Image (cartoon, rainbow, N blue to C red):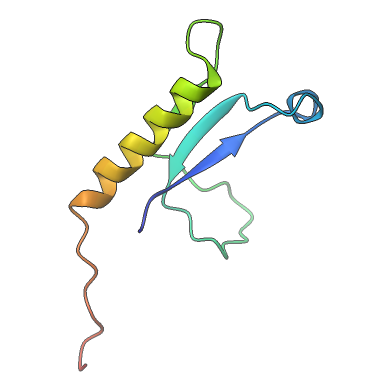
Length: 77
């Protein structure tokens, strides 16, 4: 899979063991750059949209984005 879901939280949310939003990104796992990697979508957790719902929506969108991706083998193989 190219796209993946990350849970984001503030230090206060971390203490309460909850997330503030879920983001869909194609950031490589090993990426360590000076600039923040752009996100494809963000699903904010709020009073209207609870954590479970937003987590599900993020994974559904991630699956949708990954559906059409074809990984090409390197040239010469």
